[in-house]
Structures are given as C-alpha cells and as structure tokens.
Amino acid sequence: MHTADLVFTYDSVDIASLVERSVRQELGEIDGDRTTASLSLDATELTVHVDADDLVALRAGINTWSTLVEVAERVTGVA
Picture 1 (cartoon, rainbow, N blue to C red):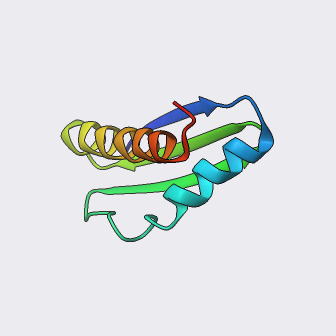
Picture 2 (cartoon, helix red, strand yellow):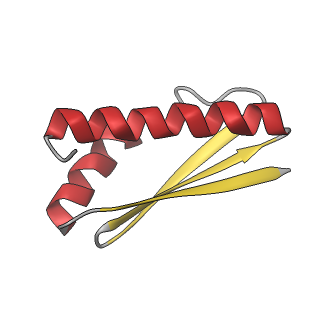
Picture 3 (cartoon, rainbow, N blue to C red):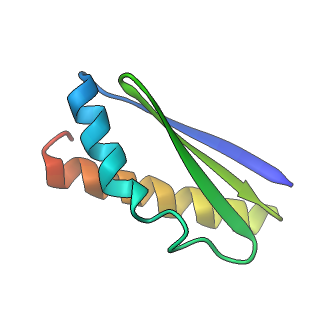
C-alpha cells in the first residue's frame, strides 16, 4: 500500500470549512479500484489522505485531489 497526505492551510476556519465541504461530496464518487481517499479538517488545516495499491494509482489520486481542492479554492475565492 502506498499513501500520501496533502495538507492545505487556510487563513481562517471559515475558509477551510468551505473548501472542505466543497470537496467532501466527491468522497466515494471518484475512488477507483486501486485508490481511496479520506478528508480531515482541524481548524484551518485540511488534510486529504490518499491510499493506493501502486505508485501509478497514487500519482493519479494525488493529481485528482489536488485539482479538486484547487478548483474549490478558485470558486470560493480563496486562491
């Protein structure tokens, strides 16, 4: 098993919560047979934990979740 944690830190709890709610709805919707993800929110820090069976799947999962967070940030005006 291969894992990665993507950690995003925001200026406020409200912003972090908004981004987290925006991407949380994707959990379970985009996981494949080889990759799963989970989210945790601790005040201003959002962590996306990606588990994958192999390195190719891990790279794909990292790219997917990084992009989802980036889009959520742009849409909410965070970025």
